[in-house]
Length: 290
Image 1 (tube, rainbow, N blue to C red):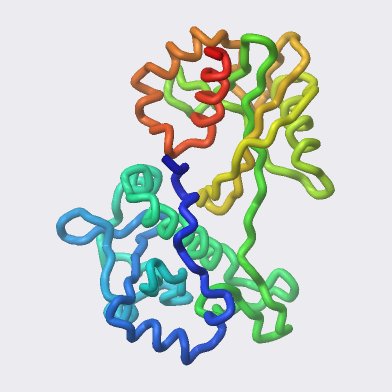
Image 2: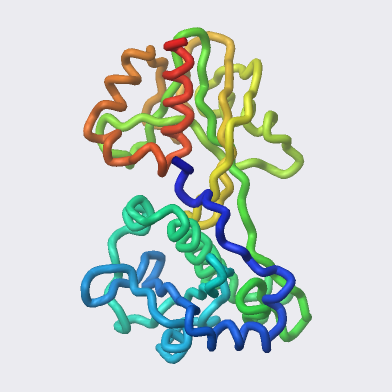
């Protein structure tokens, strides 16, 4: 099964979405759908399902700036998204839970929608001159009317790695996580870094171990609000784990300890198809049974 948010079925129509007439024709298409958000979570209909409706009807609702944005074409059908004003619709459960249970192609569509809507909300003003910006190209960019600077959605690359040596791996936990929950290490890439360098730096900073080799595994878009998680296996020199101040705890785990941890109720809360961290851990566990 594919990781959540990695289904590539959505065609972003990059060569067409800047044409206002084409966008209008897509809005008028009887197959055009719009998914609506309330805050950072999906809005719900009266039956408690995600609020999805004909795009032309959604466009008439009170929506936050910039209104409906174009997401792409899914099996030939246009998809749009918008954030409703307060009181228009009920806010659904935490978006993570909605995405966990959504079909893969819809989870990817919902993830793209959330990332773009959050970007519009958080970049309403020009970073060059401070004036208010406006949405353009059906929501794929913002333009400053004052200085004409164009602003585009940003994706923040982050490394996420399973640190291991011999038959043990290192897992850590954040202070706000449920009791007993441990996972892989992760961190944002910095300017001028390669993926390997970012991995080595983060491991050194978080647990004070030296990386000796890095293996690329996969990537996952992560709309919280807009990261690209780069999944890695990081082999390190054995040594004492010294957790950084940002971690409540980090330590070595044997494979048997990891299996016990991931057979717990906490692990079952996070299905394997949702979490790249879970994929990396299961990959390491499987390597030990060869």
